[in-house]
Amino acid sequence: MAPKQFKNMMLIIPIDMSYCAVIGQIIVQWGALERFFVDFLDIMFIASKTTPEKDWQYKKLEKRFRMFTDQIPLCFPEHPRIQAELNSIKDGMVNSQLDRNLLAHGRVGTIFPKQGPIRFHVTGRYKGQNHERDYQIADLRSLVTELAVTLGRFTMILSQDLDGNFAPGWSQQELSALRDFRSNSRPNTPIPDTP
Image 1 (cartoon, rainbow, N blue to C red):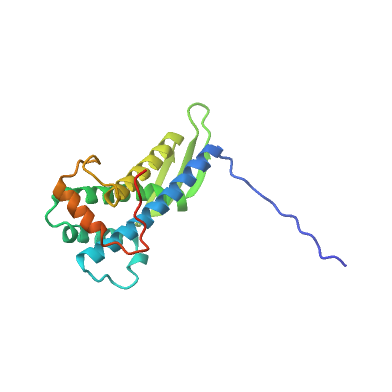
Image 2 (cartoon, helix red, strand yellow; image 1 turned 135 degrees about the vertical axis):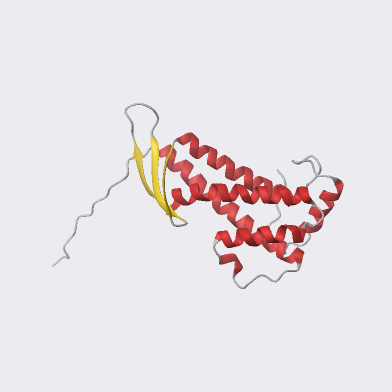
């Protein structure tokens, strides 16, 4: 006798597919940014001759942000503009983190108003607080751009082609400090070429 066949049910949340594509970009862009952040922090530990705690790469992101902040003056003690740039890059990540986490882990739904644009509705809990946000497609595209710019700023600092034409317009002393810093990377740490 053949085993009984059970019926399956499927429910696809009604969502404009353009939202799915942009949310996917956000998740992938964040993953690349966080990986580069960890690689950069690893270079910072080498440059400052600091021994990090065991398994530091797997600590909560907030703890890694604090480690990063602590390493900045150790790696660039005589270069306040480099310190400011690195703090600004980190702040960009911090500012994008809530949106990324809500989109990746929150409860989602789509709002189809009678008038106006479709909105992607997300609720979630973050750092002990409840959050609720509505995103239009333009909001999500802006987040992709913010993440890409933040990753680009990191990449630029370690670029093989770094020169004074890159924002914010580095001095020769700053360029030398950045090149010295870059020389601390491990052989398996990717240092990108500038396109």
